[in-house]
Length: 235
Image (cartoon, rainbow, N blue to C red; front, side, top):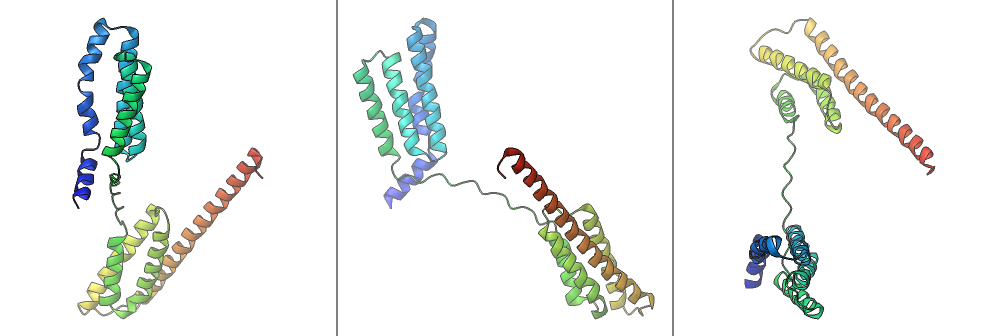
């Protein structure tokens, strides 16, 4: 268990050790810019750039790539900025790579940030229709069932059209008002049955129209893709 706690701590402090070790390189770069040679300045810039890339790799969970970058950055700093012989620079780079590999061996990759759930814009009308089914008068159910089928068709679409949303809200609001009046004891007029039939037909017609629009859009996409493949010589 201590190894797991150490791995979690390393993940939480991922890159902090490198930033801490790189702090002295800031003043060194300044001194080299003032009175150093171009070789030393180039070595400092390349070394700092390699460490910055290593920190980014650690943040992404690529510990092996980060260790290799640290080794290269250390070797460049030793060779060009500190004027260490080539063999010594290789040794220092290998030591830095080996140390980084041991430090982050077995450390789990950082967990991806949770993607916020997309709000369900149709949750409210779905609940209102369910309430009409369970608590509304039985004579309203054919119109309610037709609206539920329309709602199911809208859920299958990437983004329901404003027309469909407006139609759905108007129909639900009307059915709720009728349900309230009937529950209060109102006598249903003769025109109610005609209205309910019209509402049912309207829901069915809109559902079929939405489905036809999606089919037409699919036909267009297929045609465009076929033309593109022929233009590129892949078909």
